[in-house]
Image 1 (cartoon, rainbow, N blue to C red):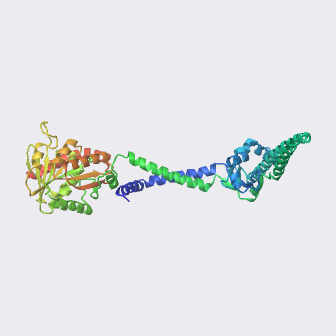
Image 2 (image 1 turned 180 degrees about the horizontal axis):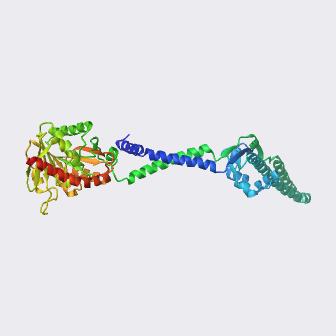
Length: 499
């Protein structure tokens, strides 16, 4: 199996598993529809009579062709389902059944390469189906024999008339003419003898309908099975349609399908600022740290890129920075021009205090982890900076050559694409945060291509599962509530520093 075929099967399996509930629901609905239809449709019984027809030939002793080769299947089927045969069957039954009704309910099938014909009839009762099927079989065979007898008699009369017309000629002939006329009469007499040997029997009934089984329509099993199969097919079509028109990343499988697989397991974003990082997520951040430390060339600027624009960098930045600071290496969390609601979460355990404030940024240091510092860059206020987020201060900060510091750069929510591009260009490596059910597939593809064009290594792609109750709409409302608390927290850190 080629790699392309393996990928195609994997995609099919991913879609099938994801939309399995939808497929099962549609399958069950179609199956129930099949059951309802099977009970709703009027019941019909089908009885069949099987006959063996005799080929009517002028030379019955000629073995050059088989009996089945002397029959025209299409002609026999048309004859058995003809109006005249149905008419005779109704006369035999003596019922008030209409000929056209009988023909509509009759089905004839002649076996290829054989001399047998099956005549089936659909009726509301078993007795009627059997009686009409047998009547049709008998009428069909009788009609064949009558047609053959009629043609045989007509030819015989023509030959005898010819002989009678030649006798006066024979009596009046003389000399050499007389034997010639005699030979003509003898030839016609031989033809009459051959004609007498022709068997005009139409055939015989092999399996009368009265002695064979009768089955009913519609078949409940067939309807249920058909409904189930149709539902399964419709469910798969619906699943692929949903996948085709789904615009957002839902899980790791979607990341794989857009060609950007998650490089680390899923993490859960905190729902509130006081939530602490879970043990398994702390292990993931430590794994990321080791990847950064093991990178070559050395990574000094690590960009946290939130493709969902939900402010995840401000939620996870302090946790990731703290994991780096535990190695006794200096770590700086550089937060680019945040709004109040994007001020970093989870700072309380590290007791940040203001050290310095300039026109470009505010500098904080941690009283708990001395290796951890926080720099909050101020946005451009006069419109003279090359970018409203990635200001000249940020650019100068990211190009510093201090190899003792690992800088983790956090973009605010709603950053322009140019800001993301600028930050990615200046960074040494990228960590991509993909919040599930809040990130467009097109966004992931676009920034995957951007990072590839910049030739920046992607050290981790975190698929982020939002905490219960903190989907996009909740987060937007939550951001408004946090705006004032962000300002208060900044003011409180200033007060602590002043003391």
